[in-house]
Image 1 (cartoon, rainbow, N blue to C red):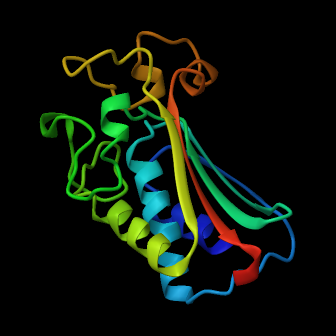
Image 2 (cartoon, rainbow, N blue to C red):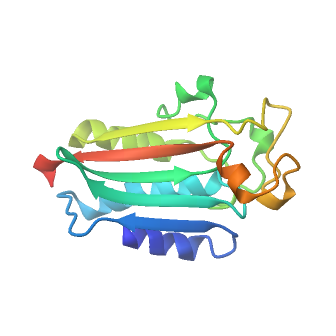
Length: 181
């Protein structure tokens, strides 16, 4: 997870984001490192592209009695209830393509093909781990006619980063059974 965090710092150096990291000591997941890296990179990229500048992304890894988990929480624009049903199907956009501003990976609202989440679902099915998510749309983005301005300080609906963090976002959790650890 530290490698993913360090890569995030490098990939978002042109963005104004805070990425926090909390990792328990001595976690070990028995899995091909390339696949584990693709999972982490894909979820981190997703979080970056959906979090406005001056926002926060929180990475966390730890263990429970039954599994080892990795959390990727963004305090961004969130996913609507309707779109939640389709998020792992691939080639699915969570917002109208006219809202995708840059098409540049790791930039806010870059947009994408949805293949990262489809790939993760396929890995989960084949390799025996779980990937779950919860999400709440930013309450200040009620429909397709309104878009996030892309920066916390440019949002006229809030007065602080804490207001932004409380208004929406997504949490993706990957859980690896301890038998695979």
